[in-house]
Amino acid sequence: MQTDWIWGLVGGGLIGLAGAVFLLANGRIMGASGLIGGLIDGSGRANALERLAFLAGLIGVPLGIVVLSGWRPDPHVTSNIAALIAGGLAVGIGTRIANGCTSGHGVCGISRLSLRGIVATLVFIASGIASVAVFRHLLGVI
Amino acid sequence: MRILIAALAGGLFGAGLMLSGMTDTEKVRGFLDVFGAWDPTLMFVMAGAIAPMAIAWWWAATGTPLLGGRFPDRAAPEISRSLVLGSALFGIGWGLAGLCPGPALAALGFGGPGVWIFGIAMAVGMWIAPHLRGRLDAPA
Image (cartoon, rainbow over all chains, first blue to last red; front, side, top):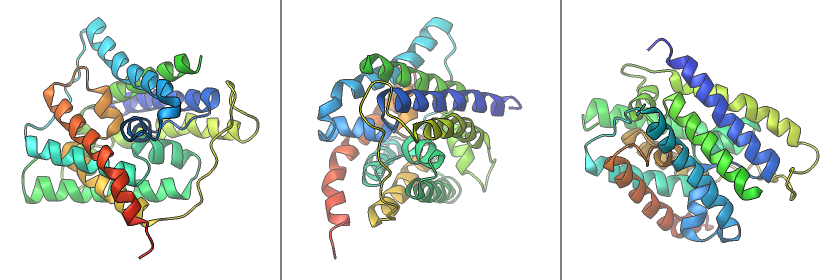
């Protein structure tokens, strides 16, 4: 749609504001995979409450928006269960091995001109493009 | 206070993901679909997010966080095998499902059972990962 890019900029601005608040107040990098992964593998036990509060806001506020406004954007999740499971495993393993995802390497890393963040982002966008090309256009599963 | 700020940041992040369209797997896959109907929205989201974040890093170059502690150190600029292989694997899953960790959680409350299936698989993957990472970076 024609207004999608405006909403992209506005929503992106909120994402950047969230990362700025988390950094300047708490001194923490807003990386979703790190915040979740640290709770799962126990490496983030020292600040578990801070992580849980972040995740509560991340899950709760979008749900609150849906409940209060009645606007529910369709995530268009694929009905291919195997693709969801394989995709989830690859995202979980990959982001933790690489120490970051779209928010940590992409937003927080690039904005700091971090070489690791820039390289990671270029690699996951390139492999994401290859993945869609193979699974959508070659195999037709998504 | 740290807990409140964390919840506020998480909430802003979730609202931003939702409003920007990034909880829609079709918009994310659309950005990656350069051989099909390419959707540039994700680029605008990244630009919108990187701008305030760059100001925050500039601000953080001196001083300490408002609530105490220190700002995170820069990681050594080392392009390790785990960084490249991990990111490549992440991209494959990102393209396949159209979800990454932030949007997956943001959509958990309203996205239906598919988001939960993805989320549980992702959690399992995150639990396995530390065992693999040690092997990847071990000297050959």
